[in-house]
Every structure is written in C-alpha cells, then in structure tokens.
Length: 146
Image 1 (spheres, rainbow, N blue to C red):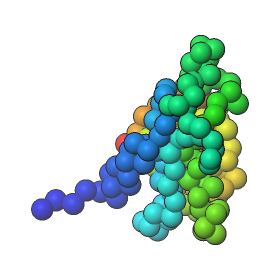
Image 2 (image 1 turned 180 degrees about the horizontal axis):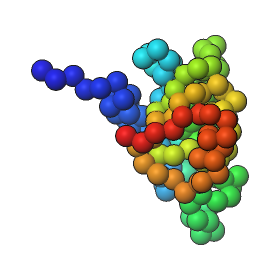
Image 3 (image 1 turned 90 degrees about the vertical axis):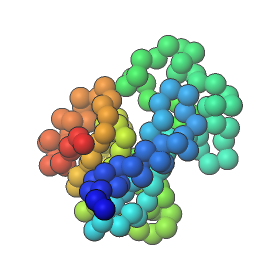
Image 4 (image 1 turned 120 degrees about the horizontal axis):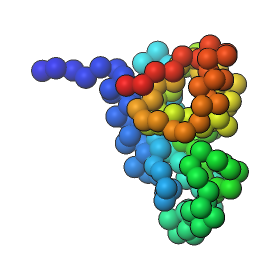
C-alpha cells in the first residue's frame, strides 16, 4: 500500500471543501494546517444567514466584471477568509501555519493571510492576481504550486 503525501492529503481536503461552495463562477476550498493537523477549513459562499449566489444570482456576472477585479462587488466570503474566521471563532491560532488553497489567493485574502501569520501557501490552480505574489515575496510568505 502506498500512502499519499501530506501535501496531496491536505490539498484533497481543500478540493473537498470547495464542493460546499455556492459560488456560480468559481468554487474554492481552503484548509489551514499546523504541525500536520487541520485547524480550520473554508469555502467561498455568502455570509452566515444570507442567501447564496446560487439562489440570488451573481451580480459580478451580470455586470460582466472580469475575474480578479472589484472583489467588493460579491456576496461571497472567500474560502481563505472563512478558514481564518473559523479558526478565530474556535480560538485557534493560525500563527506559523500553512494553508492549502485550490487557487492562488486574491490580494485581499493575501493580506489577511499575512496578518494571520500564515507562513506558507500551497496552491493547486492559478488566479489572476500578481499583487498577491508580490506581497508574499516582499514579506517572506512562501508560495508553491502542487
């Protein structure tokens, strides 16, 4: 029997989390890991108690806003944000942790990950936001694609 690597194990969990997403445009999942233990998960969807995009429709789609632009015009909380929030609700520190995300974080999420103390970001797909990569390089957050 061959065991999968830790990276593959946690990335598969991120992809599983993405299946809970209610976003019409892109399903994203995230898993925050510390010392090879999952401390939080997240997926993109509307705020707690709010109607989801698969019910209301997508304003970004209606306005033809390109991917990677005008993040404030969206009902969804991003997967990375929801993972950080989940850790916070449960009183779990993210300092020194790493996060597995199905795509490159947007710049807003990138800033949050830096301030949450995330030291490494492992991605599986790309997202059009070079500002995130520049920020990670500037502050020393490692990013790698598997």
